[in-house]
Image 1 (tube, one colour):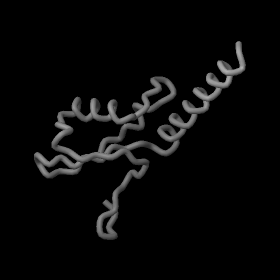
Image 2: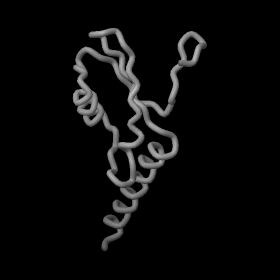
Image 3: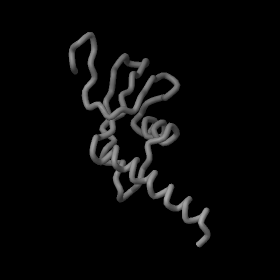
Image 4: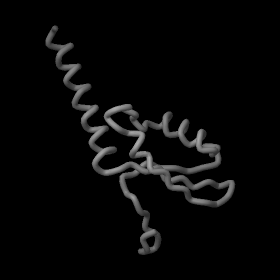
Length: 93
């Protein structure tokens, strides 16, 4: 195998370790504010981001997940975070 091909393969392996590390060890959550009902939703997506299935929560796959959960992403604001709880005005929810 050529040096550049080998370096590329190693880079991909390293990238996979980082993505899986974040999901497996810290947890990943999607917080969504749905303007249709004024509710903030929290989805624990950690179980979806495992070494077994290799799901990487990029923008498109997160929007597909939210659509599948019944949200219209054009009427929402959302974010992915490792924080299990959110803080509002100094109060943790």
